[in-house]
Amino acid sequence: MYDIARVRADFPILSREVNGKPLIYLDNGASAQKPQVVIDAMTRAYEHEYANVHRGLHYLSNLATDKYEAVRGIVARFLGAPDPEEIVFTTGTTEGINLVSYAWAAPRLEAGDEIVLSVLEHHANIVPWHFLRERQGVVLKWVEPEPDMTLDPQKVIDTIGPRTKLVAVTQMSNVTGTLVDVAAICRGARAKGVPVLVDGSQGSVHRPVSIPEIGCDFYAITGHKLYGPSGSGAIWISKARMAEMRPFLGGGDMIREVSRDAVTYNDPPMKFEAGTPGIVQQIGMGVALEYLMDLGMENVAAHEAALRDHAIARFQGLNWLNVQGHAPGKGAIFSFTLEGAAHAHDISTVLDKKGIAVRAGTHCAMPLLEHLGVGATCRASFGLYNTTEEIDRLVEALEFCHELFA
Ligand code: PLP
Image 1: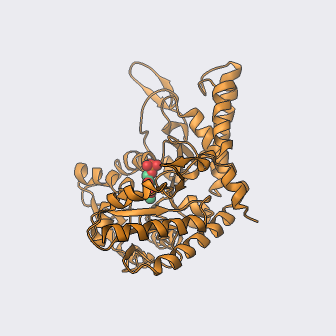
Image 2: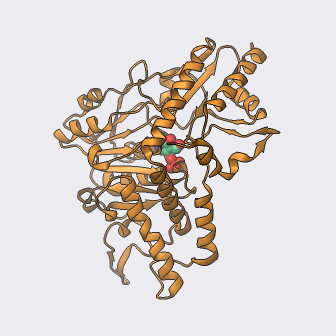
């Protein structure tokens, strides 16, 4: 049984007020709040367990290394991945995708080779591929979503041609909440011998993930959206693809031996982790993932499906609210504009005065907003601690905005 009152009590920030009103935090798509267990684990690490990792022979260094390295196993378990050595620590999805672009794609792709992307992508899964377009003439092929913002897996598969070297696709849109059938895309791409990178930055937060079921080659996650600290994250990379990758950043930890005129590299995954990492951040992410697994991702998914259904039902009554994207089975993320002149920033400012935190702007997804024909939207993105009452408060506040700006 999902006890929402108990879950909310785990997040100290939820009991604060903003602008004299109880906080209603609906900006989880940008970054989620942290449960006390994560805050406590990070404080404990700094107070009692801190030293640099992998370097010392002293007690604290070994302790910190054990705690840090254990997180690889936790991430693997969270993703249903068989081998912790396929987990590379990053600062988030952005770094994970840039790693793949630089270390795997750049040395392999030539002018005229193609990368297939969907129009739903976040800039983190666009700009690293633009680098390859600008620098080495790689061609980006875009797959359009359907009118309801569903992404048809067959369209993605049909776009794969003889020169396609990679498909890079999100599991869940951070703008419309569309869930993409990445497993179907991977099956089709595999049949054509093309690797798939899945941007799991949103998808991993809202439902259980099983890498073997998805069948991808790369799967990137972001710790701060998973109720962990900012600066934490990871990317799962299949052993086969790892073996094809050159190192990304150079420095300590990623080497085996360095002389004046030669260098040899550490084994993966450390080959891709140069310098002192976000030790305490990754330890915090491990605790956040354990928190999620204790709650049960199926329970989180069920709770958020109820929030989504309640929001859809309430929004349907507001004929001046333009919600972008109605993909069946979507996640609890809603981007919208209000009919009339009010800009998304004005709406979010009014909502803020009522203690409601939403995001306004282009959500790092300019090609999608261009496709939708809107300059900016407000986005309410729900998380595991939100309630149907909060949705009702949001609707009241939107009605107020509608009257104010009509
Ligand atoms: N991909 C998607 C779908 C996202 O929503 C985000 C963040 O909003 C990212 C990638 C980038 O994540 P980060 O900024 O944590 O690297």
